[in-house]
Image 1 (tube, rainbow, N blue to C red):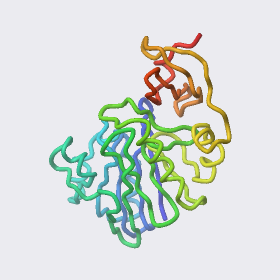
Image 2: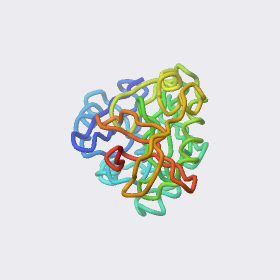
Image 3: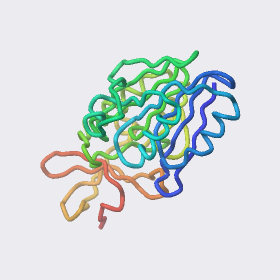
Length: 246
């Protein structure tokens, strides 16, 4: 199997080529404005692209996707909620449990809301999963992005992904890959959810609003990500730049 990614140097967002092998069939997943190397690999290895897939509607993941799908004359599939937002030429086809066959590959959509309502992860056979912006190496997705559905959904989505085989390799929407095993053991958000570490209790402010800092952890971009709880009981996961400590 081929799984190759390119990374946008500004957004750090990934685009992927997934194929069953040289001379075989495959799909392109998400658009980050850095597709050239993936397209060159498609041509060099004689891969037949059968679909272009979109994990969610956010701008750093949909750059040039319609043009790429048009180049290969293949359908551009997304979750039905993403199609409502993005319109043509996006087509519904990645609702929960839907499968896409590409040569010897089977891609299964897993609806994973929280970061946004239309978010899907994509399980590749039984070995790999493109987790997009819900589960990353060492962190999880934020819950205040456009059309986010909140902390409870995000936690359920992450926990659903963690039910995959521990050996499953994950390929996030930003930065480096990891495995289900490593995130189950080492991810600081997951460690608290599993009761291995205790919640924090430090007072803080989020955009001027009083909150409690449950967790302060590294983020994929070299900064920090915070799990906070507001006085009304609402939990949120936000970028560290939104948090004032002390």
